[in-house]
Image (cartoon, rainbow, N blue to C red):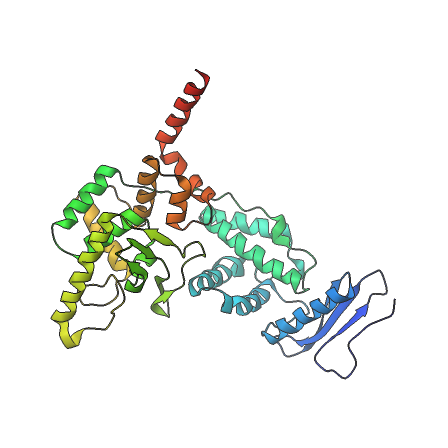
Length: 383
């Protein structure tokens, strides 16, 4: 086969050439490492077109600011990897990854050379994290991040195989959920209805729609159609350290969804709109100008999640309700609907889950009526 390569003189574009030791092709590109030294990076491929594609990947990585090192430590590599993926991550996700590298991985395994990291080293890392008291779920999240980062090292030609793929994190324990009963929800809503306040109407929407905390606080009037009795989840309100409170895209693609509203929810939203108009008139020139958000506090400014959770804690304590989180209202919505026979697929779409399997995995054990009905149907079937 005729040797093919990029013409000499096209500096910085790299080259593609046929292997001498065995069939295949090599893409090669000179890049600069973190210390400023020139390093030749290579990537192998089975065919010439595939090698040209690999060469383009090398150039894209170089142009994106990914530095190269002949033998970086794990901490050095993860720092480079974080810098390369930061533009594609939500601030909160990036902050979580950075914390994992700095607090969990760096002090224990960061000084080891990337090329020397083995699956056993990572397995020992997980054992050490577990012994330090870290939960199984947190260790599993660390594994997910590390596996993704090491896969990128393989794609970049820095490793031959992914060592994290050979390590097994502890099985994450199911996140505990504590839904309120129908009687407890009724007590909560009846009590808050006695005083006209945005919090009662927010609770109504939380219980009847199962929306996430950030989705409720980020809900805009432009996304609400009271005549059609539906709303569209198009953004969420979030808080990022160093950034502050701001609107962001929904958590996942399925989270961007349309929810049909109950008559109770429509009534609550109409009352909320009326009160906001009255508040705006009362504040006059001091109105902050947040016209589109559905839920604002008595000062006309966006509500912090911490503020909402604090009020909820006081309410449940005052009413003698279980010590539950505001997020458990989302679970309450799901369990109440499923216990009344609403199809799990409908509930899954309403909550914005990525699949019905997630819904069933979380809630099936909290609905004994479903199991009783299955047993009764089997009796009827077999006589």
